[in-house]
Length: 455
Ligand code: HEM
Image 1: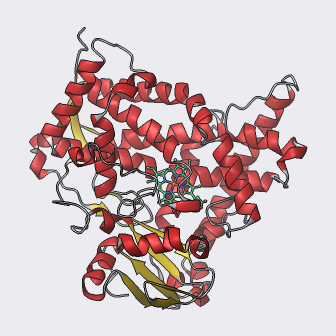
Image 2: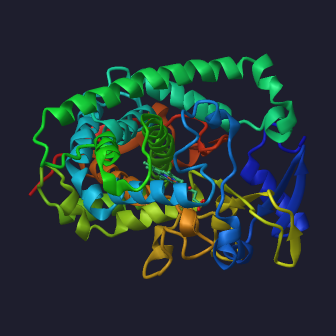
């Protein structure tokens, strides 16, 4: 426990693995905790014995604001999880739905370009702008633009994510839950739940009014809230979608998509700024291929290859979810070690991506390493797991990647970049902030110079 104090979990677990091996059992307070740091053990957990590990740990801080204890992220593996996941995969994350949100992404990202233009060559906080743009895309896809208190909602969600990422006493001693009452966490979460209830309640009410005013034969599916309300009315849905279930699902989508997607863009830009040759190559490819275009559209990116390699390489060094957790559903044995039921299994995606056993010169940012490689982003290679793997793999990967590519392409195409305050690329710090999502500790402060597209 003392080793965790003030240190990053993924680094502590990687260091322990150097002494104790790729599977390591720790007793963290009352929790049986198993750390996994090799691709062979990860494959056994996520593929060979997948069903035994297809459950996620419940996080008390999220349970406190749940309306129905429904949803997908923390649902036990079973029928209810399967049905909710099927709805989300079909209605929010299918290739068709991802295409449907194309104009939303293009609009929000052109707003980002305008904001950068307005900085007029002065230093500014790029991290803040990326977070605002990314969060706007995910919240508008979830419930449209009718939310008047969006800022308040996102602040509460960010604070909740921050608290949920802390390894505090009641986390490792579940019998000490009363500490949440004493330190004010419980009352803070109650306030957040009231806020979520007000905001999501009025989003659902508005969406219902808009649905009533439309022709009944039309299937209007502008955003996730519209879709869920339509399914609520449909006899074919096959399970009960109460308003509270809908609130839980929407909240989970915003939780899952807030911070993850934006920190992925932030890390990729940090590496681009730190590696001027990579920036030059990315800009040359974009500017040559899209010669003279004044408005970038998503379809333009089909021919762009190098940016995709940059994205993969950035996920290798900086997976936003550095460590993801599963819970074992029955006593079993992995890699020759007995693991008791209910143990928490932590897969260290960060250390896998930097392991010299799998990667040559692992600390070097070298996008070309993925050229011609079959290694994908969705968990078929167990040394590279930015979105997890198997039945519980991140369903939002396609959605996040579409925004990420378009955002990076726009920023590289329209602007030349340097670090603020005369900092050289080598001086840019890459320190990480500990939490559920691994973000930059310090914001990216930059100066942008507009580049005129020439035909
Ligand atoms: C760069 C962006 C993202 C990263 C790196 C990321 C990463 C992850 C990881 C590592 C997991 C655990 C997978 C496993 O256990 O195998 C996960 C699960 C999940 N993610 Fe993402 N995610 C991202 C974006 C999103 C977005 C945009 C959404 C929703 C809009 C989302 C929704 C979810 C949900 C609902 C789950 C739980 C799935 C389940 O348990 O069935 N994620 N994500």
